[in-house]
Length: 130
Image (tube, rainbow, N blue to C red; front, top):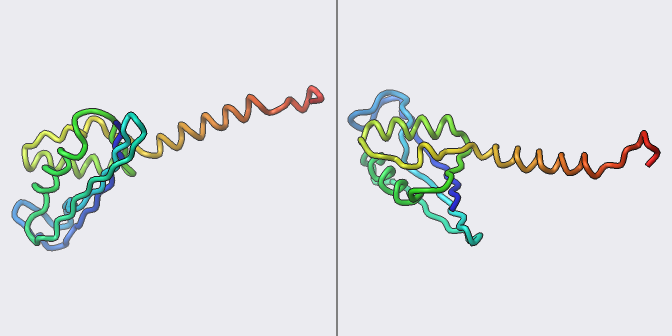
């Protein structure tokens, strides 16, 4: 399977929960779309609006949502990776998706390059009088 993940954070200037610092990115919501080998798409999400520290519930639900294998595509690998790293360090939890994170733009670039390559191959050679 392949997973497409997006999550949201808040970064309060004044820390709200214990073990947080000013402007720290706090994960509280995610959306994961799973593309199965059969081409079927399913969706899982998480949103914590309880008012308590959302990070533990977030990581437990995320670990369950992304399974143990398959690439996890994200919009901004640097941002999502750093937020997950901080969360993993905090909760001493094995977030299995971290080494499987890929930048979503890599898919677009791959498709674009393949499309451009086929265009170049099928273009007639104008210098040869075609």
